[in-house]
Image (cartoon, rainbow, N blue to C red):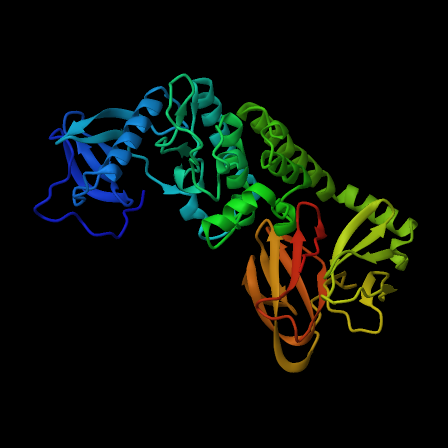
Length: 469
């Protein structure tokens, strides 16, 4: 847990912790609450102590509310002893201020990790499966968390995850005076929580789906500049499917995430075990398909089938779908190709390149989308730029790989904007001895940092995967 750069308590206001504990430093704080890293003198171990900030002079409703929250957290967590849940060691009061002594977990929150962007799908699934197991146990003990979010999931250097902060948890068999109260964090709460209705285990699973969505895509499922906007999206809007934001997300995993975020509780997974099982099966399915498609004999067979069905001769049926996206059909399979955005639909024609590789073109317009091209000799091909102006190419690969433009290395993927001169260029990717074919692209004036041309390669599937504009 990385210490925060925050003001220390005033010198004349000592930390409100029992004498048994030596407060070492502040590692987190909110409006009134504070978490200390401390040493247990009796047992000689490092612990974390959550209490009310000693600088706070408030002794009114706010103080009572946070004290009640600490008590609720202690009561809920006291029921739970699971490796995926932060352990509570002790609770009590000092100077009439409640405190909780808990396990000190060395690591970062998932929110801090995601500041750097989306995780590889396998890693995101690994974390969420641990959260599901922790919730399966908590729900069996009659505890509903009600505030699952990325900042309440701790992750250590070995990618072990722990669920924390049961401050708004509901204990199923305990009476409550809550009536039509919205409990939780708006961007992660379920629609029923947003309406102030009672939350059950399936509400936690909705939040886990939102966390998984964010881990897979690096984007919020329900973004908004204010609470009203966020809640309206939670209640009424289905997020963009995660696979449309990150092509590395398999269709099976995409389906699991979307079911977890269904608006109606009965349409979600019935419990955390079912969610975990579906996610595990989806991951295994994606792995099997990836290994099959990456096998040399399978790839050769698929290539032969493509030739026999006329794909190598450029026989395609193409249609535009929406703005800026086209679907190219070949047999029973469909793949998306990038096109420019237009106010009116534009027809697409195809022409074979030398060597039989198909080229997608817009009628009476220069090609702007990426296209795979195999160099006959396997050598790098230099393609001069047509103008002196620059454009951007967004490059990605699964797994992360080195990227070359016109035979020259330009770093590792992912990169949001590789600056190249406008005109034609050849892009390729290399990963642990494997090398993709050259990818011929035409960078145009409108390929800016905000609207880059996209080039992505999937080594597991052995193919280029067109991006979406």
